[in-house]
Length: 333
Image 1 (cartoon, rainbow, N blue to C red):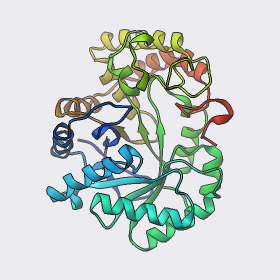
Image 2 (cartoon, rainbow, N blue to C red):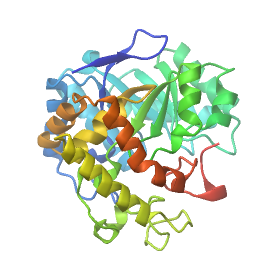
Image 3 (tube, one colour):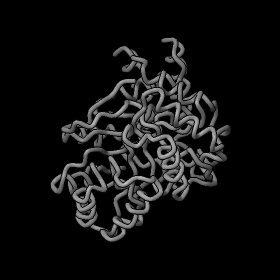
């Protein structure tokens, strides 16, 4: 396992961060067997993963509860970097502190290594929220502060208050929207990027050949027509461009002897500013694959070829990084 430092810190994290959204059952991921999730988390630790990311909205607290149980029962707290988030509707200062205490209780710990805003709120000035986060940091309940899903306007408002250690963002071969503005700003400012959805909910793991094969719970993103039952973005979607890009990625992967998932993960970790790639695993087999795939390396020629293969889709999706909301409803600012 390779480890990376966050900019301007001595905090070292594994290049694979275990994403805990899918360790419990919900409408997006479907049913999950607890024993398989526990096995995957313990296998991750055995493989050298020291970084786990969760949030109170994942399973309405169930994700934090299960992670806390595994960490406590196996005496792992001092070995791990644990990150969680403020609920989007808990951004007022008094609510931030309440939400943090609830997360600490579920996680059975007295501190978080990284506490992140999940989304900024249009109703609460970020300076108010940030003041509460700094209070938690001074109290020792939070060691580092980060953001998730922060656009350049948000970053411009936050950085003068205190540079966030991290910005957690969606990024993969078929969702390159952050490359327009946010990624360059993070690199320039020295904000480490944690990237999620590296396999785009299985689409880059070669699970689906056509849009019709993708279940409704995973077909909510702006790649798909807004006519899908759970889509809310109000856009026509980019299904033709998406599956044409997947076909080209599949061909490039075969030409270099990689699976699509290997190619996708290796491409992501090689990109500027990326400190760690967040990927979940529903069982030990998926976990071991993720660990192995992130150790792959790509030639500059292959990276360029893959970029070219997905440029049309990148243009079609545009600069809005929000996977779920389009136009004026985008939650990125």
